[in-house]
Image (cartoon, rainbow, N blue to C red; front, side, top):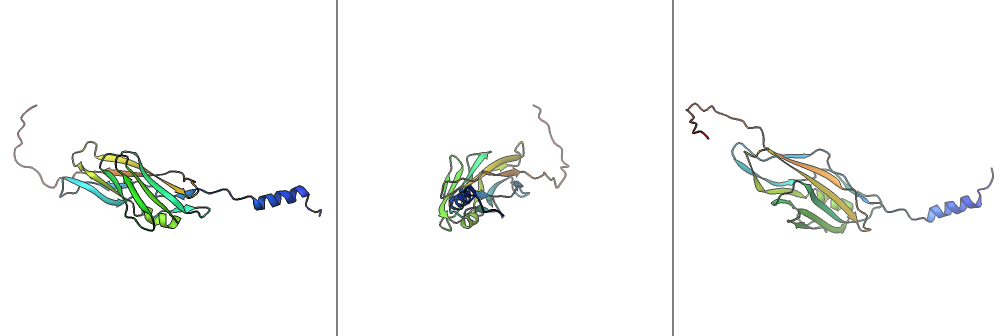
Length: 183
């Protein structure tokens, strides 16, 4: 067996001292859409109140960098009155910009703390949806992006929010006469 060549030794040394390329954070959310009903049998209108947009998934960073910020923003379907809420925790503060519908969570802190914080981001629709809305659905898409302390940004993760009226159920027959007054 021959001894390693000088070029092989130099290449090996170069690879040992070459710094690892920075890794961007990774955000993973549930792949299924969040679906909410806005009507109950006892109400003609209902608000969608404080519903978590992410339930169980993860925020990580391959090179263990702290996360600087995480943004939750509407891609489509945003209407004035839609909001994201967050209560500051784990050295993370939240700022919601209501005209644009964008929530920014700011650290820096660990990916694990941002994962916990993301699970505490809630969607709220302060405008009412009516039982007679045509069509009986309102679809929204939200994007989530994390940026670490080295300014490496994650790929945007999308989450669909579907707001629907349930099927209308009639519980009694009308037996009285109905008058038609014409057009």
